[in-house]
Length: 149
Picture 1 (cartoon, rainbow, N blue to C red):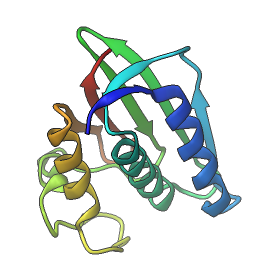
Picture 2: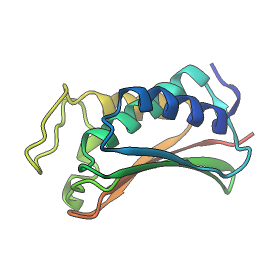
Picture 3: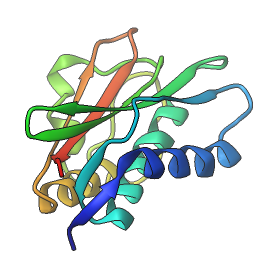
Picture 4: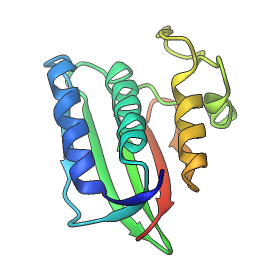
């Protein structure tokens, strides 16, 4: 179901939920950008946020920082989850959203390989897009865009 959703509120809730589960060695923070409203399913958006934050925490080094931010873009709104982790080789950027795909770098292989696939499907069904910017050794920024209100 789609309805107007305050992304700032959802981001704050997701970050607070994940703070309780994250190791103390990783700092979770939000980048305040005022009120940003998207059109989507609030429960599914929160599910995507929690998954992206959880992945960022998993792949963050000790003392690393994960930042969640929102921004308005032309006709849509964007949410970004940035980490300071190992990064993802450019050749794998599209593959990370495929069913059962698990990264090959850094020796950290956890989960079923379904999380990012599910995120992609949820975002797509809300009329949005999802992607990643990353480079080896330079961390990753996962983002999704949804229609704006």
